Length: 427
Image 1 (cartoon, rainbow, N blue to C red):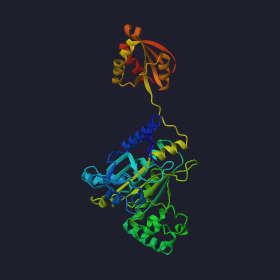
Image 2 (cartoon, one colour):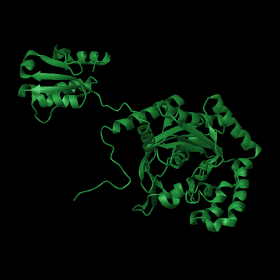
Image 3 (cartoon, rainbow, N blue to C red):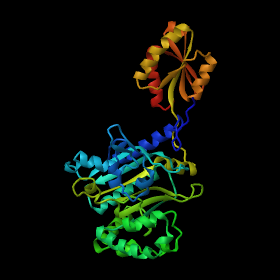
Image 4 (spheres, one colour):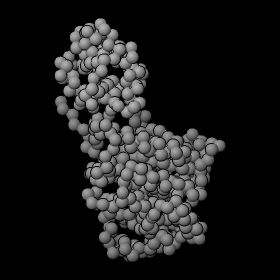
């Protein structure tokens, strides 16, 4: 029986996996500089966590979650996003009691959503995200946004645009909600069934609807910015000022609505301009979620974060022709000729690897020509040629694959020879 890969998933093979490793290391290094520490949460959680944390009016909860019942009758869900799990851990592990506040975390891992697979949008995808919990200072909003912008900048992406909005505090959102209900109520029968349900549960989500995006009422919908109270306006102004001080350009878009229910005050997306990237140009999104920690059973704790798709990032890099340093450099390849030499190979390779060198050899009994071709295919810095005569003499022939030069080296000195060449950048 032949098995095929499940729809909406992918195998990341050698040659591609190095690109992922490079991006993930870039993310970890950037988080280290910003003093964000890694958290790893379970791939599945209680279903109710996402219903409460993400919001039961969202498409994620209503249509896209992979939910199953375990043998104990418990409803579990493969995590569709990272924030709810991170906040659950924050509450569960009592991080709110840590002396070092705010708690600044990052995660890199697979998420799962049942949706129509398309370019840059998979059913199993990988997110890199950060969460900062414990501070309501607008400066940390600017810090989180700055980290996201730095990530794309350091990978070389151009045409990246930061889009900002404020969703206001609870009072501002309540006033805006009433205005939205009055605005859409007369035409609610013309909108899709999802929006008809959202009118009473979360009318802000109507603004984020793809089906009704061209309806004339969308263009004239009340702007949240007109309903911000003084506190929310001052907060938003400070975030913008800090970004200006950091020389991070932005565009304010009153129509920006994040798709998850837990957002308030600062909301942002990073988009990319340019041809060849398709209609969906959003690379990532995030915002402030004061109230989410309490919703999940913790004490009153403000928070802010973002998440981005590694798949969409790779798409953007490819579109702009940006090459990642993804070649796997092998320091040396051991070529053996004769049974005596072949018998010496395992211990010699083991010694070189213990010294920190990347080494491989032939396991298919190929002739010397085939072994040399294999050394070239894997981009080896040196070919180490060992025959029975060399074994008896205690020497080995070392060929520099780039220049073609060859030198006889005592086997006892081989490790130092290769490490010195690596230090000089010869391999």
